[in-house]
Image (cartoon, rainbow, N blue to C red; front, side, top):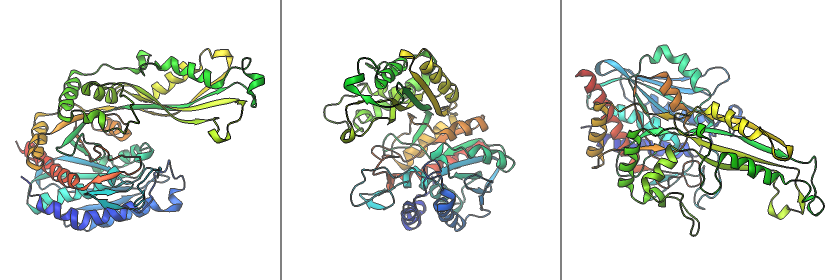
Length: 470
């Protein structure tokens, strides 16, 4: 077993202070800060992480900031094998952040780090600034104890929150240096609770775009026009009902559904038994609002393997204080459709476009502009050595068996890595547990959980080497 003292001490003495500094830097992803290069915040977080990496006493450690023309920078590191003649572990993380959002507690903020009750509040600490620090801490612990491990390479990108558009170019450019990978460790996911090691088994895809309905060239008094000019909002409602059953929320076209594998059904039942009503009560329901599913396993499957639609933005609707009695000329709704892991995201956006634009009610001017199509990811069957290693690490560090969970979000880099390394085993994990609120206000990093997760990663990398020596 890996001694945890070194890892925990390094977290207290070095990593937490660096993460406090990291939180202060508004390194928003390029999608949210198109002038990121001029502002320099992404370069600042890369320099912060690079400084930590170069200071690690790991023999043979290579650290390099790579800059492809016109792209965000990528921090690459490489640690040679220690006693293992074959195999490569790829470790992934990112340093860019989501935007501020509103609703932060008054004594903190997105760029104002606050440590309270063992949690570091602030944007990016949990998603995903901690990753490079945890990865090198784990490898440093293995070296300090003389534990065998395979060659390890790290990819720390800076545009993940924008959908990782630059990652494929870096994977291609670095392919000769990375070589054959047989284990991928991704540190940008979630955990069902803070009591055990969690492995992410799947991620949903995404089809997003803007539906616009135009009925007039300018607004007209509603008393004069209503009853003659159709409401653009009503037409938009009718169009959305082609996609979604308004009563149940079920997505109607079969093209957006996929069969759920038996293994994932069984894992959902097991995870629901572990988490109990936390599966549902972790959400801040208003008043007496009821969930769409009361059974824990069904709730987990709803959020990980079934399609679901959200309307995430609107144009053409004035603020209530500014609303007059006007029949508005148009309504635009930004739609986000989460997709089952196997469904092709780009094909789904085109299917939405065809669905909405065909036979427009009242022959209104209807357009759907696809903005994002991302395919999800489903993990390959877990090899026996990895399943054993996960349980052994979780029992040793947390005192509980490991567990598996499908995530409802979309992380495009996973599909990219899955396609690039089809023969690899995957440990996708992370620190985003209940109430950690990634992307929202009061995001926090559970420090104790992150320490233990670092130790678990070290255990799994050591188990990978032991497997190669069998």
